Amino acid sequence: MADQRRRDERRTRLSPDERRAQLVAIGVQALADHSLEELTIEHLSQQAGVSRGLLFYYFGSKQGFHREVVRAARDGLLRATEPDLDLAPLDRLHATLSNLVRFVREHEDTFFSLVRGAASGDREVREVVQQARALQMERLRVVCEELGIPDTAMLRMTLRSWVAFAEETLVDGALVSERSPEELVDFLERTLFAVVPVIDPAYGAHLRPDVATSS
Amino acid sequence: MADQRRRDERRTRLSPDERRAQLVAIGVQALADHSLEELTIEHLSQQAGVSRGLLFYYFGSKQGFHREVVRAARDGLLRATEPDLDLAPLDRLHATLSNLVRFVREHEDTFFSLVRGAASGDREVREVVQQARALQMERLRVVCEELGIPDTAMLRMTLRSWVAFAEETLVDGALVSERSPEELVDFLERTLFAVVPVIDPAYGAHLRPDVATSS
Image (tube, rainbow over all chains, first blue to last red; front, side, top):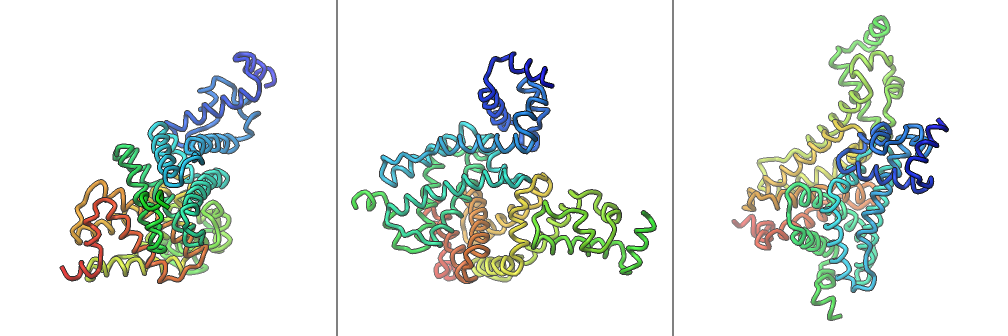
């Protein structure tokens, strides 16, 4: 096995870290056409042209490999939707939603697998996806706070629920019914601005661009 | 094994169908304290006081057992929230949401497991949960149709997204932050009435009780 490993590594002249990153990248790419369940060590071994032994050496188990792949896919999504803190809150929200919709368009199957990765039998994989949701909620909460909407349990419940709403919209609208990106961004923005004032109608004024930018 | 089975069955004098139903019921009950992953044949065998062989005889495999348990839990939820077609659309919606919130209160861990059952590695289990969501969406669509809101792809996307929203609200509001049932019903109703008019502001009038009942 050590011989096989040496052969594997010599073939492409990568450092162990580079090799590991390459294998994870192949896994993320494979997520585009395969569910997590289908991403077996055998499959990756064929795709990457390396031995199963090397894969076990790097990831320990299929679960270990899945966790790294889902983590890498999630980090790709979070990087692509990183809020630009130089922008005013509502502009930043608009830019983040635009980036999110673009990411879903460009990596639609990865996004789909990621949302469905929440539907994994593996608790750690689910937690990786839950962390991404929690961070998206937190980004929205910061926008609300800057707009003068107080941080309450009701606000957090609303934002968390809206993140689930948006995920479903993106799966449905971007991947199934092929809405245009502008239409989706507009729909997401307006549904968010519709549900937050359910907590307190006064919040409606904070979320209207004309009012917010004039304050 | 045949002997063991005869002993099992003699002990409680149930017909095979009754016995099977009883085992599924024990599984649904166990969902209250355990994730689907933890519901093993061993666990059920201990709980029900029957042999592992009998369980395999009835359900074939752990997956077979899980599917029946999730199906039974889903049917319980759908029965509890069955719309009363004698009621006017908005009253029916209100009653359905009240029943939903009551179900979640009374079977909170089952509901939690059911929502998380969407997070199962087993494709068939996920489909069972997806069917429940599709039916909830359809019930909402019928209410909208009766209120004069046309059945479009946009409406379906909105309702499907709102079902995901509501699920998150129920997990968060009923199970985590302990909102009152009335508060939750009111919140759910008002967020639904807030997002549907995002499609077309004219729909807002259809969803206001005073306008709808006067028509």
